[in-house]
Image (cartoon, rainbow, N blue to C red):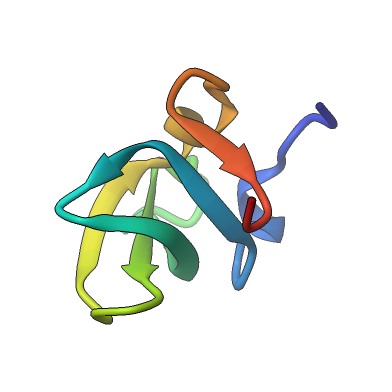
Length: 73
């Protein structure tokens, strides 16, 4: 898998390996910027495609292939 950069995650598509609240397909709807201008990005908001429910997760979770697959599989 290609290395991810948090600034390039906006609007990327993801598939949950394990179904989350009956949802499987997600879209990164927001990259949450830190308050300090020199701070690092830690969080992204993902939105379920079907229900439009939103959750905040640590963006590094998306690099774990046991949790997430890139694209809609």
